[in-house]
Image 1 (cartoon, rainbow, N blue to C red):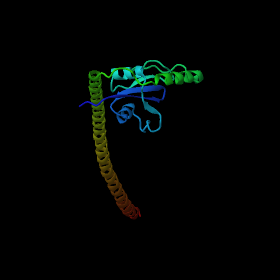
Image 2 (image 1 turned 30 degrees about the vertical axis):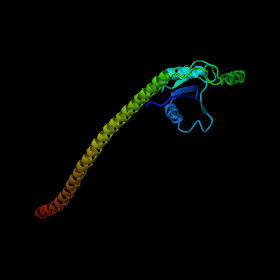
Image 3 (image 1 turned 180 degrees about the horizontal axis):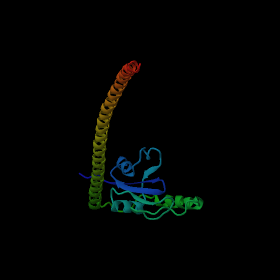
Image 4 (image 1 turned 180 degrees about the vertical axis):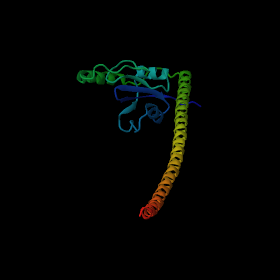
Length: 200
């Protein structure tokens, strides 16, 4: 059974965010918040009819508008253009906000609520599928990295083994060369002595 949706609102960074979700927890997950914005007073359930209508039209989708404006919420909002003059605008927003805080007088449409809840579940499943696909992609890339690293490690070990064998051969040749030089020095000395005696 699909759960009833509520509209939640917060401000993160340059945007006001709104979403139609079945719970505060679901809203926080959709916003990607790593702390409970509701307990901190940074998020709330919205009672603005315009915000509710926009969110219910796209349940489960995070809607944005430039922070500090009364523009309508949409999926792809532009960055705010005026970030400097907050005084009067904020006051105007607050007074407007107090007026809008009357309980919504719109009639409860059970069919629309069910439809919105099903759309939210569909959006949530889509998001989960995207996350699963990203996780699989990360795992696939990690496997490729592990495989390449293992091949590099194996090649390095093989190289070290061959280099050690060559070094051992070089050392053996050096020993033989030294032994041959010592033998030749001895032999030469003996033959030169014989030559000197013959010349005598």
